[in-house]
Image 1 (spheres, rainbow, N blue to C red):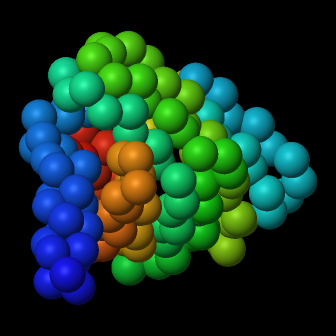
Image 2: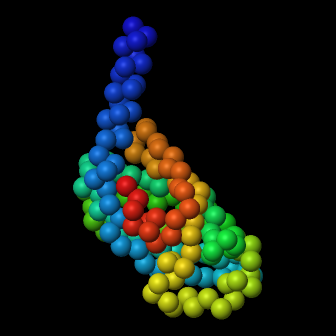
Length: 152
């Protein structure tokens, strides 16, 4: 009986995680960048996600270190969970809280630059949930824009 229960839990977990590879990030844009203080920034990204699956996906947690070259500029954490509806292809708001570590490195930053996200590398993790199943995705150092465009 115990083996049957474990098998059912495993089957449910595998079924819940199925089709993650079908989900694609289509586009990323900076919707809002607001300075709360000299070291705190709220960054809101519009992330267009194509989710053809019948599962609602939630980005529930995340922490990323932000780098330019070898220098760590900031730490980012997910402010609020982002819910991606099942069978949708739309922009979703991804709200990030940014704690700046090096103010001088950001002083000359042009926030209106369309290639703003390409200037930074990130590393850390994101936690994705679908139903009762969750998946923690470790992120090795990569371009911030490339990360968002390659998430599956």
